[in-house]
Image 1 (cartoon, helix red, strand yellow):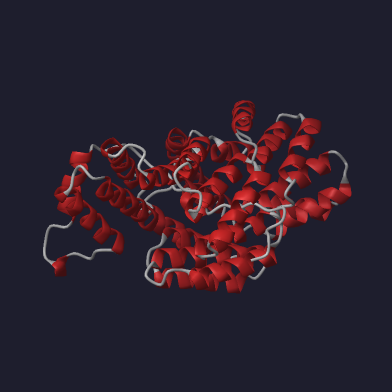
Image 2 (cartoon, helix red, strand yellow):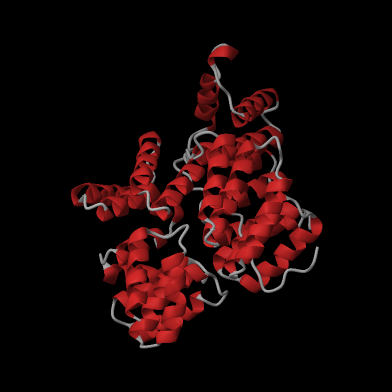
Amino acid sequence: MKPLKGVALLFISLTILGLGVASIGSLFKSTTREFTGTADSIKRSKADERILRATQLIERAPQQAKGYNQLASAYMQKARETAEFGLNANADEAINRSLSVEPDNYDALKLRAKLQLTYHRFGEALETARQAQKTRMDDQDVWGLITDALVELGDYPDAVKSAQKMVDLRPDSSSYARVSYLRSLHGDTHGAIQAMSAALKAADPNDPEGIAWCHVHLGNELMNAGKLDAAENQFDEALRIFDGYRLASQAKARARVAAGDLQAAVQIYEREQAKNASADAAQALGDLYAILGQDEIAKEKYKQFEVLERENVEIEKSWRHMLNYWLDHDRNVADALTFAEQEYAKRKDIFTCDTLAWALFKNGRVKEAKRFVEEALRTRSKDARINYHAGVIFKALNLRQRAVQHLRYGGALGSSFDPIQQQTARKMLAEL
């Protein structure tokens, strides 16, 4: 494997939220109830089977950490599969019990670092992963956790070093997935597609959620490359492999938006919301209904977004998504700037830099915004939102050539970008 130069990584599937904390006793009771009945009457996923086996192990050996660790891992897997983020609270309680019966046991520390990433407690995750490394330095998985935390904190040079160590130890699916993200982060879309294709080939055939995850992220990179049909095929394949997978369903909806089929996108998002409401889908629906001229429904969806996202803020201790919503819709712009400055004090990744730049711009501090948007552009990412904001700021400063360069990305790409801002980008390009 050739050395990775000037790059950083993130395995996005780790960043799932969590809700609440259950007692370990009530946790086991609820788990037992889930599996009451005949084999024919219950459709168990592999994560369900893992939860059951871990619970049985704990019942046999309650003073050993192994069962609690297995239970935590199974609940985290179940949370990824179902988008039931509250299951991560069960994982957290199991990890706490594991560490209470065997303090500082290695597997529990690894799981804690993973869960801290899930809760967006990146500094804590980095500290926990490094604590685990005092026991072992040759664990590829821990190097990946360190990489993820460093990327989220914006420390890309050190992230490169830890990522390279991970790849050197074991170039498997998770390694290739991180390589894909790092290449995307640095504007190498073709390389990102190659690496995610490798991740897909190396994926565990006994892990349908993991395979579906790879298909979704391969599709996202194909969308970034403008290969919309190929991207949508990847999303369809993910749904075939893992029926009802929310990550794939929302990606499919974005593909329908890119194809101009807004009604189909609305139907997908509404179907997902009926099963399990999420802030991202609520905002997407608000934007789609606004474009379709159904303003009253759009307002209701935006209200739903704010309620759901405030819950996320409590969990993540991060205002970024709420701030982007406020700023894009010209709401609470003074408060948004205050929160953006607080976010930047904690982490310096390119997305936080971008949010601060956009908040400064919306508050009329355009020259200051230029400094932070250039910091957001430091990896040469082709992220549509960052480039759109850069284009708008450069246009306001009469830097025409730079404005055109970045607005092209903001208007033409956008696998994770909202359609209203894309329309604005295209209008601005036409004026330049």
